[in-house]
Image (cartoon, rainbow, N blue to C red; front, side, top):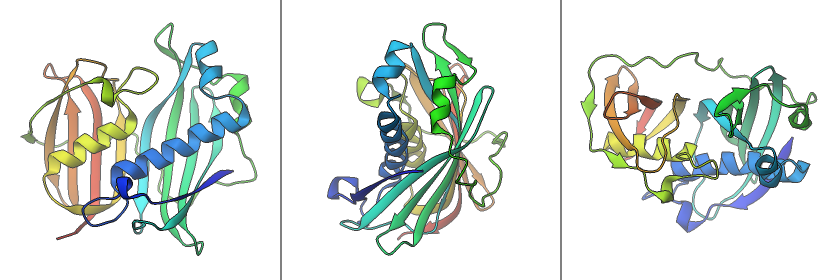
Length: 240
């Protein structure tokens, strides 16, 4: 397990003074990248080997969100590495040790030169932590289905500010765009995300909002119909 301590900054807080969903996603990603640097297989290692990590699926369960200035601890561990796939858990805890967020995720190693998914290299097995079992959570969804036509929302053109070191739209930004498309203030206690294609500089992302029992699903696609990501928000709690 790898952990780091932080404190919720004002710049990470939403209108209610809680940690924003966007900041939460970034904390989870930061934890995994900090672990990579700690193990000596971080960004420089990936660049030398023309390789990157891409995420396929998230399931994030939110009991509650920490508030501005709260001290928190973010932790992660890989519980399965096999073939093309790596599976990783995350937690966010308060200073008293209570759990406010837990997450499960599916990752792939990507050959940037060949633009293809590859078997997890032996060097990456340093992440494996057999001492930490998988969290007690439902299995990751194989496919998030989108029902009906949906309500089309204004499009976003990908700028450099949305990109990460792989020159793809950062994972957290898809959730940011999906949450913005809902146009309402609520806390989803469960967020599921499936990434299908990587949007890059200059691409156009069109959100389509689908109302479902217990929540919403947002499809983020190109004008031509290529789906970049599907984000499902369920168990929603109104905030105002």
